[in-house]
Length: 568
Image (tube, rainbow, N blue to C red; front, side, top):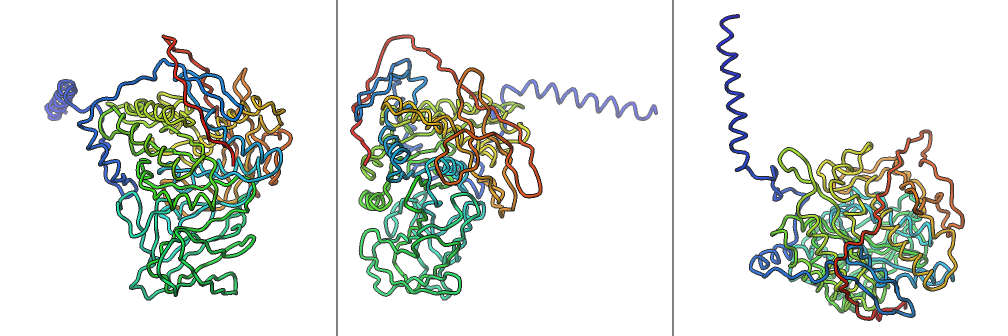
């Protein structure tokens, strides 16, 4: 025993010295233990943003002229929303054109509404977007998943349809190509068949069993201009094979695969060299349709490279009423905490979108909370709040609606809570949501959109409907949603998430029963989602309710110019 004493004291001395060294050198260690520049196969930042960051290093810091101001609006089509403080800005006034189309659809059962939802890895695999689409279609009607790419890196993780394709496609993306062979499509990609291939070039789609998505409605191919006069599409539907000639004469061309709905089909492209292909659209032409244009690593800046005439052609055929810009994940921690460079460039992107899609309403969704390790503790990243402020400023300056996702989540430290929640709502990267969290985020966005819609109808003098206080609960999925940042094959089960319970003293939108495709008329009883043979217990999640905080110190005000957009 006495022989072990020297070793014990030596070990004890080493531990004491290590602790003393840690205390001594702690001040010289980086505050963030982990860097933000890890190179993984799933994280690729667009080249446009990297160039912008480099240029911003020598740019002067922009002056903040909006904080502590009151924002007033000018009348649009006879409607004027009350003034808002900058701190609580939502910009419902600038969504009036969108709300007018919804009202026409809801009351007169006329027309349709289409939303283009642009995003990054947060919406990869149709996460968030699929739940927003489901809620809107449950309330206003509409069948179909919308526009889908020819190929997609997130196809294995998407459960709103099965998407397969051959490996001999050539893809160009606006994330890393400045001068494409042909203009990028509305999805930011352009696809070509490879010239030297011997194997067939094909794509195959299969409908899911989800509510409103159980068929591939009116499948239509979108493709661009080429001098190729010999190309054709070989369409295989069950045991039938149809040969359809391609006519790439216009800037944007369409080919109808079938009238009505299909469960599945495959298309082989024959002698289709040099023709730019964009994707297939699936919708029934009625109700609401939401297209998910997500790209991993996208900052939103590449949208500025859209060809104006081609986008106008897309708009003529599809007819967009609202464009959602949901970015920020890939912008955090690039450059300093001064995001005035991003604010200015995204303002130009919004103006460009208005040239491409005249009369469209635009909604900016801020970055969500993100946690980073400071010392030994996970905390809200120091870049989150400055970025949300930059996003709010360009929303105000471009007359766009604004959703502060960071505050809706719960503000400071909320991502840590979402990760540690049981069951968890976010992944261990403290950045991305899982399918439960994505559903909750979708409900938060839907509820704010509906808040503005209810206020718009009141200003318009329209009698409230029971559906105004209901956040429709889509029919439970028969296939398990998978996380957006993972590539897993969907399995058969039901997501165990239930929209938030009401907060005391305030009306909060409640879920309705599974939709039958008609506008809900009465609130349905709430209950846990079920699946055959088993029942999944549901833990209610509380939606953060942020009471308006008036922090104005002076009576400055800013009036936004008159909004001339109107419903078509």
